[in-house]
Image 1 (cartoon, rainbow, N blue to C red):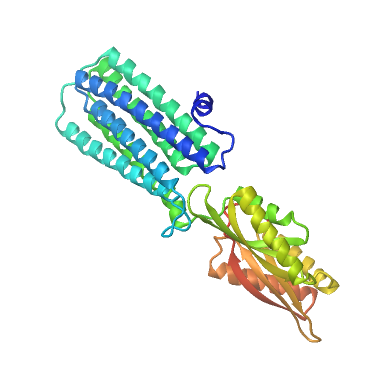
Image 2: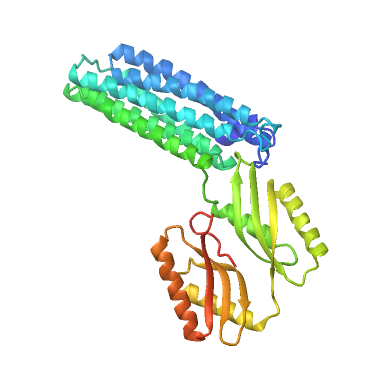
Length: 397
């Protein structure tokens, strides 16, 4: 069904990096969400009034709020499509994140309202009527919500949209909440015990938790996230594929909305390169990156001495030591300043994010000691830093 809807309503759906395709997918998600949630609201409200179940009626209004959320998401996607202007030179892509953040508050508000109502129901129980038809309708809504969750998850993965992934999680949470409501009705029908208020409390906590998770997911790109390892690999391999690029490091990616990124990277080149020749290649990389990857890339050249045997010997030695101490350690900007009594090894050491100050000092001492075991004249001049990449980054060279 997802593939059918995408092919039917999204022109050029295969080109998921295209901004218009992403917008069309967002609009499709919003319209499907609005239609499905309005229908579910009507069905649940009718059943809730028929049975007198506060949890069913609250769940109905939860679906209505989901429809409003879909509207906000729809508007957010359309506004995020606006091109850059004088006041917003990087475009309006982050509006999509802000819209999702607003949606999270809708979800949390519904959960809180349900919690208050459910506590009142526990304190002052009301008569509940069991209807097989009500259970059947609620079961149908669970199936619809499960489908919506799968639909948004597939669509979110297709265009790498955190908003749609959050919407998918919200739909699956609604499915769990409605399942709990069905449980309370079945228990009442079989035993005559009214657990409606208690189930409502559970449902409300699930809804509020879903809202908090959505808020966290949408705040992360606004605050700033580590680079996705796949994006890290794609950019570094792209830059290193050009003739004359020895290696790369210090990749930083700034996100200005889905498919709107700016990046900077340090590219290692032979120190014998002529300035004019190197500048031309760097310009080519930057232009091609924008055209092929859709990323505004700024490349900084780092000259590397490639014909110094002694320097290469110590570079290999340092690499072996880091591998033996912690395979996650890496280094770059390696330089050798030789002398008769003292040889300085100058480099930047990249450590995992969990390394605190004490761990950094310890690893620096271990590296220095291991190098001196090889040659007492060796002294390290280290600058310790963290990688901007997420877990399991590609090794920097």
